[in-house]
Image 1 (cartoon, rainbow, N blue to C red):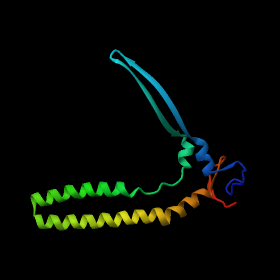
Image 2: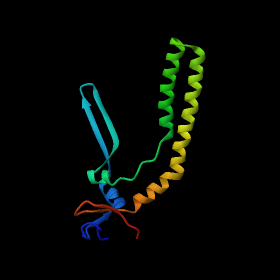
Image 3: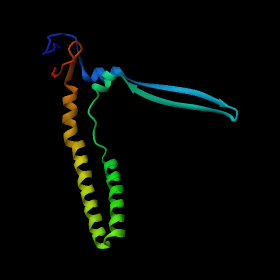
Image 4: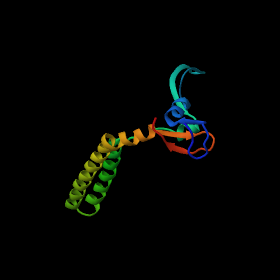
Length: 139
């Protein structure tokens, strides 16, 4: 591929840069102290700054938004019920639940409809290693 900006042929596809710059490292450790010892086994992942820059787009995780919204809504409901009016608190709570359901559906639809299009655009992105220009190209 030739960079449309500087005409260099030193270009790389985003997905390749991301794959090469991301790593998973397994580790094992034995920790000793005066009270005994313990074994630790785990896995760590990381990536280079360039791999982070070229990482794929993230999808939505609807359940997290729903749980955070529900927690905030519950706190508001408690405040309204205790300090103002129980009926108003119930109306507020029902409104918050309906709003959260709508948000949940929007995020789920994003993952099904919009995300595949955005991900496909990412798969067509290239980076010039000489001038840093990002561009789209289909092969």
